[in-house]
Length: 220
Image (cartoon, rainbow, N blue to C red):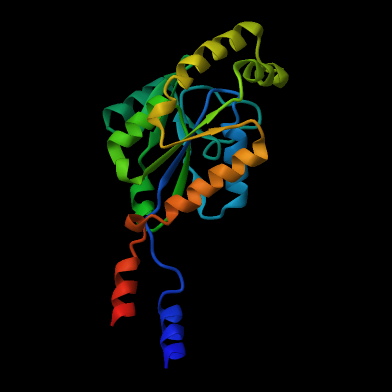
């Protein structure tokens, strides 16, 4: 009899419904958030990247609607006026924003979104939807190592790298505003920690919306 009840529960609740979350990864440029983001998207089918809107021109290899939505200043201004952003900010003379779009509706259906944004965007996202936000700040093991990583890219001039290092110090000062902080001294170990955070947050009781009907069935 007990085995029959157990089988019935497994058929009725193969996967408990849950509310999705907005998973933020932030770090200074060169500390590893882009690499960790790509690894997470490749490894986890339940999360997808939130595509930002930007006023900067596309770089070589970037695809409209995949990496960013590229717009001019006038179109960006119009979206700000219509309150069509969760958050937006100035970054190196250009603007970046997260369009609301279908995110709120998809969260109800259990879809998770990955956000690659800075501390300013994180604050704005908290203000709009705190209950759905989980934030992780990735630190470099040291500032000399951060500079070495920036220089190894061979993409920027010394002046640009100096500016990025100055900005990095300011960004790092906001580490305590995040839910979690991970030091990226080894990319695989850092990725493992980030993924563990995501899995644990998915299991929070308040996000498992299917628990109430499941427990009622269990008790009944």
